[in-house]
Image 1 (cartoon, rainbow, N blue to C red):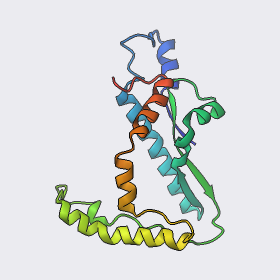
Image 2: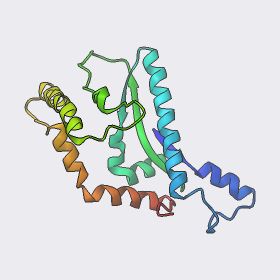
Image 3: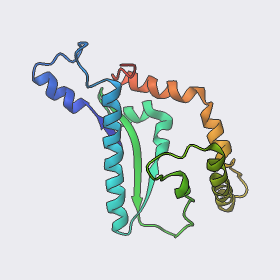
Length: 177
């Protein structure tokens, strides 16, 4: 489990005379939250790379965020901490087909972002079909919506933002700041 951690820094600051309940305290603001989250993701990626170099398989677990309060309770996370991602590491029992990845042409650019929507959609259409086939081959009895449909659904999910922000607030973060 990878956790963003400003608690340790708050303990150090408090020990050095900083009043952590004051408006001057910044370890709980949105910038620090974002930076600590980035640190956790970088640590996860480093561990994933190391594990894979040893021939181990890895699965990044974003699903841990489906029940943040329970995870906080189980891990006894103090204020100014927040779960970011999980990482399952093990010896692969099989060599399944790799999940398709976004085309490089929509991820990497030379000197400028290519924002032409028609070109982007054209390049994504083949990927959309690959992902759909990938999921259909895994379990045809439980069809999964196309990649495009999944993105469209997530784009209007009103609950996701408040759910995440509410949990962060409960951990002592002032995300609006």
